[in-house]
Image (tube, rainbow, N blue to C red; front, side, top):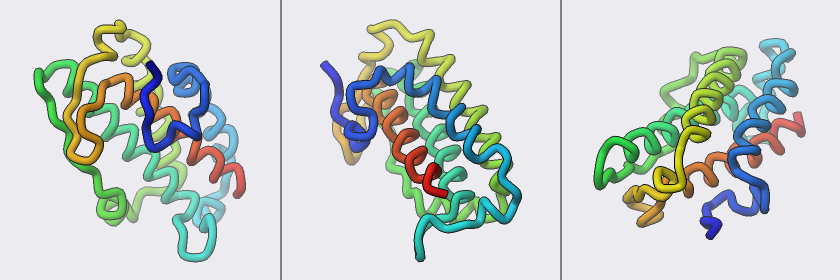
Length: 157
């Protein structure tokens, strides 16, 4: 059964592993040649800049990948909420190019881990204060849809 996440509509019926393999390369192709000032363009007035979106993507790869890793080795693991705005407030000096490189590297690290997982691994439960009982498979679906969601934003720059 396909899990329902906040980004299910973005993922659609795509295989999450295929999306996790492909989307970072698409984001790299879009932003990889940008000059520093191009990263500072906001999505819209009062919205995050392209740099901030890339920082956010890297942060989410770090946080969501950590959730999966902790669940794999910690029976009864319970994830913590992530306050994306508070996290963003701590990363103000990271350049757009560095954020892009961090995202691509962390995304690659995560997809290699996910490719190694068995069906039983993907079914490991994670407690979550907002979403309740989720699984590593749920996290993978969320991550894939989340990347696609932000890819569509970056395509508008």
